[in-house]
Image 1 (tube, chains in turn yellow, green):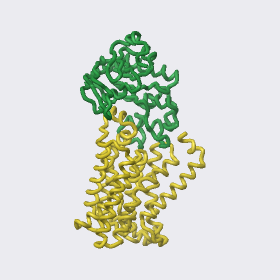
Image 2 (tube, chains in turn blue, cyan):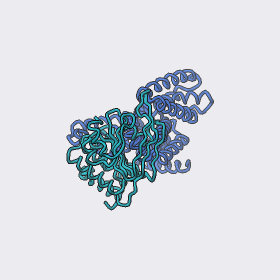
Image 3 (spheres, chains in turn blue, red):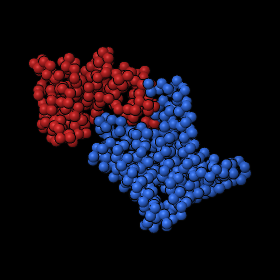
Image 4 (cartoon, chains in turn blue, orange):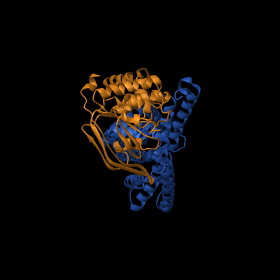
Length: 301
Length: 231
């Protein structure tokens, strides 16, 4: 894969050198980040629309918080400070599956249980991070919390690509089943869907995507980018294909613009913050359109 | 209908089915048999366990006892009481049909052949013109018709109806009865949870009256001997 990344990088850098592309394209880390953005956009757009319909936004937030604990564990066990993927994936998957298992066993309301787990993950993560903070650079912590394009390397891109493939292989064939399982379990049963299986698989996919996006967007804001493009698309669409398509476009646009704008105008903001701010502006625009256009105002009447 | 003429619906046997939820008895040793190709109505008071029995048949309840389906039950059509749905989610009737009727992700839309199948099913339930309309904007009766349409696609061998006529207007009720009668005539086994005793008398071949346990089971005419028993 590295040769492929190098090939794309060389082509773009040549175009930047000849003035066809803006100056930030001359930097390797910008191109790495943009390649990641092209992967993250479709992932978050498709998955985010499902997260929104299934009302699981706070679940991904709790996974983001759990990732902080994963980073701390990674530092403690001697993993790379900048890419402690084993610990992050390991702890976050354990966390997510425990949450889902507890919810299925206790039948507690989703928001209650996620609220409890979110608090626990935040408390454990903050405590452990404070404990290991002496061992690591503050910038590492900042990049975990808010994302940093400077830190993106080939490992991160390969992880993203692998997660995207896993989502395509598992998530696409089961997309309808996953959605139906939460809309009407009885109907899903009648259609031969194993609700427990698809619910667990959905939780695993959200976890994988959340962790894989941490480097770019950060633990604190990854949930926002799952939710905001889907919410913005919902404002101005009337069908599922249109909503998902637009969510993908908005997520990709937000990532690309959020990466390039601060570079171009030398604005010192973290990538995650810039990306989410761009997405938030799009959301604001679609909200205005929905509020003022009779076409969309009456869509759900 | 030609598509239903070759169908041989299964028999359904409930054998000593019991269910307790939250310390409360919902079903108590329920046993009865629905013959292949029968149009069977399940009647009883609110909270009598009708929907729970249907959900037990779907494998959704932690019941004890056994439920046998003798013969092929697939395709299985099911019409729920409602589809819990955030009305603001932009999903058209065609999207709902695609969500329920195909493996290809609904956000890719339906293929040409599938679209024709969905259009035909919607046409049969009298909502053929609503395919592009937002599902959330439909009236309760229109939603029920869409839910009925999805149960017809693909043509079922076993059709489970959970009070499908709730919220449907007079014309819709007649259409529903005609459609179910047509499927029944074609050999489909129908299990219909129903509150409306007049309707049950009109359409049912056999009836089970339950209130946690089976109070009566037999031909529909048994309701004439139990006036108002289900209310």
